[in-house]
View 1 (tube, rainbow, N blue to C red):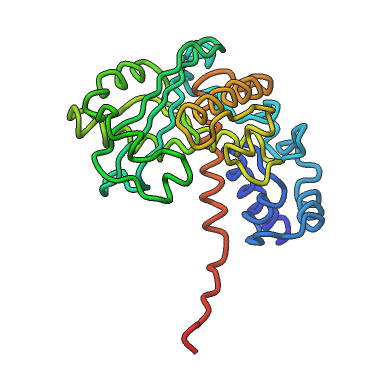
View 2 (cartoon, rainbow, N blue to C red):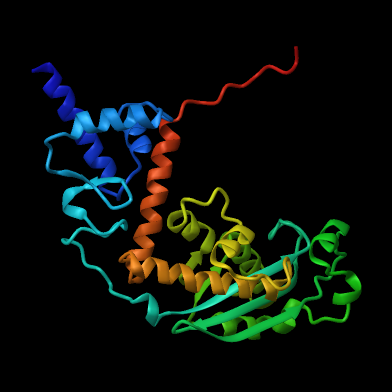
Length: 297
């Protein structure tokens, strides 16, 4: 009788964990049994013993555990009792952005030295906007080595103030997409704020986050690795237009992959990424604190 109570507690805990979507057996057992990083064979044995004969638990075609009443070919969906604003991904247009900058501090002195936006509509690349930008400050040597952009190239280029209306027009009405979108979003938002005293708002999609969910088999999700996986050539790496075009082509492939697995609307996509983040937060809470070594001895 005591064992049954324990099993009920653990299975209830498992059900709560799986309510946000499927989970790998190692993550699932790590969470509910407080055994992060358990050997897969041990986790499989424990899960099979725990969930045997319980119809509320099942496994999807990828081998992940899920609640049996939420089968969806590997992608989470909201429960039927919640209203879903069905905005098809194919009905949206996207502005795939890449910026090259003088450093990493969008609000700490660094500025955009080059920007590109690739417009994608109904599965096609329809426009490419790119320009060098005079950042009004020197370009560090390490940036020039990485990008090939020098002060001589940008000294007569327009400042961001001059191109801000064009940038805003390009972004307006489109989903903002970038590989590591938080970085590009911060810099564009900071520049628009300085130039026009306007904020940046709207839908945002990070292809790094999307790749983590769609391509779990990749050890890294850098643009080089994702592009290589899809056979996308990057013509000018670390230049705004080259990286933005490659990201746009990868985006189209990833949206196709998502659609083939049942992720068809913006709400599906938003929930997919949000559910994964929730599982990551739970895993971080379950992980023991790292050992700190005394290096002063």
